[in-house]
Image 1 (cartoon, rainbow, N blue to C red):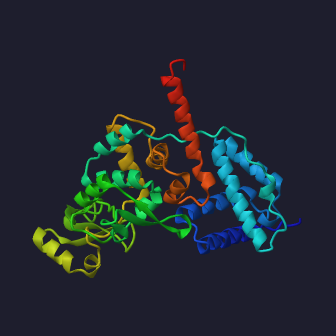
Image 2 (image 1 turned 90 degrees about the vertical axis):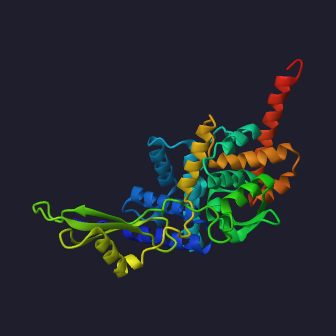
Image 3 (image 1 turned 180 degrees about the horizontal axis):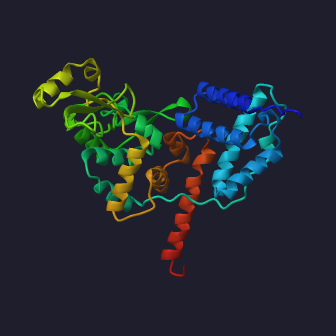
Length: 358
């Protein structure tokens, strides 16, 4: 019986090399994660076959497999774009002569225009903010048109309150300046107070106190012990690591003695203060926006909708498309031109609504 060689391990290695190359090319963390997930899934799909020997038929079969799982045409196009990047990398390394993904065409589909809130709806959403931090976040989101990842990474040191400008790090680690007006400035000053360093929008989920409770180390015994629990946050991490420790029998130490003993331990002394500089994560930001939208009596508006609103409202008021391109951080003006279609649609709607014979 002839054994068939498996290329599964070699495929995983190629995917890892591709991931390293993306990092060297300064692709954002979110983009790298998306590519990593795609290549891992594709390697599982081809199984023991070599990625170097993949054909356009294999890629079509993979896309059909994803379509059978319910992926939309837009998502399939993104997957195809990612595979073109992966096999383009293999071609750069002279591992393949042609990129098989280049011979697979994208799906023809109707391009939906982006949905976004009106100026009045934006005001209602901002007014629905529950805290000074959330209001400042919504004001900055609309004032700057920043991406979610850019908002998450903003630091106080990058904000020039005198010049009403923020330096942000966009896709591909490209720096640009974004601007804000008086309303966003007032909201920022109210939220920040005297703070001028650290992440601009910080999480409040770390504000938890040390807990010392009574429990039984062994369910079969009646003796009760003091049990301490707390959460440690490693440096620059948004994910807490839970800890617990038995401190001693209740019969031999009081609550105050147990707490005092805990504070002398090295493991507790190394835990981080709840005042650590930890930014809001993307999910927290999305939740803040979602709740404000619901409180405003609206629906279907997301974090990225503010970016669409920023661009379209600026364009409607006469801003040059090239300026909007720079403010949004688009590499090509072709990407920005989607907003001209939005404005043209609004013009057509206005004509039909207000013209005497519309």
